[in-house]
Length: 313
Image (tube, helix red, strand yellow):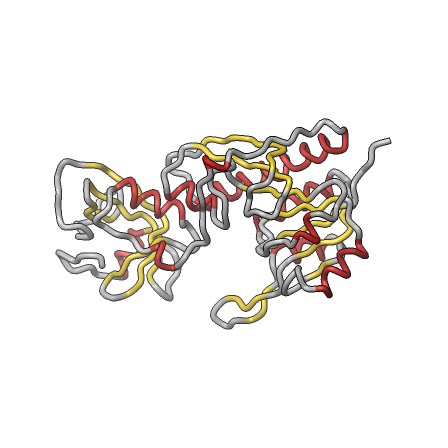
């Protein structure tokens, strides 16, 4: 008879939900769900539950929300639960050795990159921002380093030329959910192989800062379009129009031999609102002015007059 593991699931955002859903669909015993505490959200700053908590409660699962998982109060509950395996997906806290070393069948992490590339908090964003044409999901056996544990299973996928963070996020969430189940099956069957990462090939995907989204119109068309793709729809690449923050959620580029003043706007065309970059034109297609809704640039221009010669800051 297979030794089916009792699993403690740790995850927080929407990205983690398909993996938890898959574990339940495959009838693995999920003995509890650990997620981040409810946080203030939106203009009213009302407390909002994380997506994993909402889903887990709908399924009648036990939910724990420790402020810090390394505190003894939580570790005591963890030892009482005594999981055979911990599955972690975008949880948002670094696990202490006391948790990593406890489960006899390992502490598994679902990471949306082809490790050792893009270790860190924002691998999907940075893969797009840096113009990668492929990415994937890696299941690792966790150690104390950040995303540096041995690889158990990895699957590659191409990145579409117009793919945004939103679409890549949704695809990799499903890919990761399926890959995890395959990994658990291998562990249960006793034929999982551990492959150490080549640390010399590691690259990093740090947590995004507000300033990372500011568009520099002196950069190349490819750099600007990739930044927009990598941050769409949230947190959004942005510029300033007449002193107001303008998010750019969708754009296409056209490299030309013709130079011009970076950030200068020309008359709108069927492609969108043209803005001069270092080596060509970026056509803005979907925008969101501060305190307004996202809209196609044609709709935006019907309600907002841009003076000839305007330069985006």
